[in-house]
Image 1 (cartoon, one colour):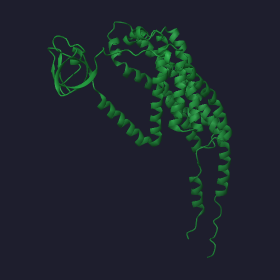
Image 2: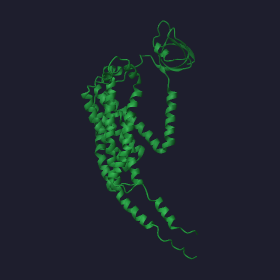
Image 3: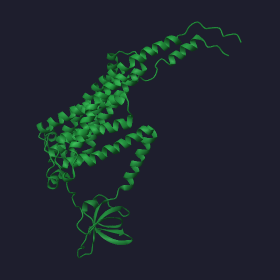
Image 4: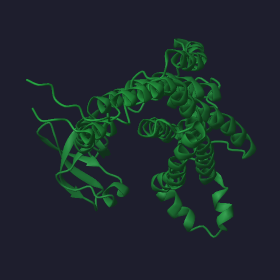
Length: 409
């Protein structure tokens, strides 16, 4: 059998020098659990207390007159001069009214569209009205492609994240929206929604671990700061929520809804995804740094972790801003035509709401990075001391020594 040289043993020691990722001790895990337990209890109490009852539900707005219905059809011909579409409905060729803006938007023969039937057709015999395009196929294809790519790249963790996203959106649909419509305190509703969503999304996507709990703590701290700033900013900046057409219609059907509270809740929820992203990434960065360099002091570990954190801060400064620019591009085009100074434009109406939303969300996000880094450093430093000592002992046993002669056969 070939001999194992001292150099070979030295290479073996070096290959195992980094060791496994630091694991939190039972004591550290207990401290982390006790740290998030109050937030979990308060979130559950908030859900139970604020959950809208049957009497709080607002009636849905009817969109179809009695006897009318929605149906789908295929466009066979466009008659722009007459303001009509020739459509095929259940194998029959019919006519449908179409507004000029829809024709300008590009309704063409072969399009799949949604129609509204008119219960009592007028004298001209046209019994249908164009409502919108049918977009199930392209949107469904994009959703399937997105889910497949997430599953392919992130595997089970990606699928778990998608499940968490569905649960969080379901929570908004069955709790947040009805509570806001019923006039419940928007600040409480927003904080409870965000907290509950983070508990579900983080633990589903990343599993129950000290690292995930660390990221959750950082997220909750950033969320708390965001909520406080949002509550102050909506009052100080006099954000009324009465800026869009939908906001003007809403009080007619949901008189209990507080439009300023809706803006406040929207500010809390708007930056939640990016906040979660930077906290989980920052916690993972500290864990990996400790794995690669287990003997780093807490101060040095925090300093190196914040180098990564500063890159996060630099990137998120324009990430959130560009997200708003992309979503509000039509508004910005219209605003750019106004004969007003830029400062007046940015502090007026709907634009001011988005500016405040961006600034408040960014402040909470930036503050969460050093907080998460500090918590992660404390956890891995407290949990890694025993492992560092064990690693030293193993390295001492494996230390290269004089080569021994093989035993005679």
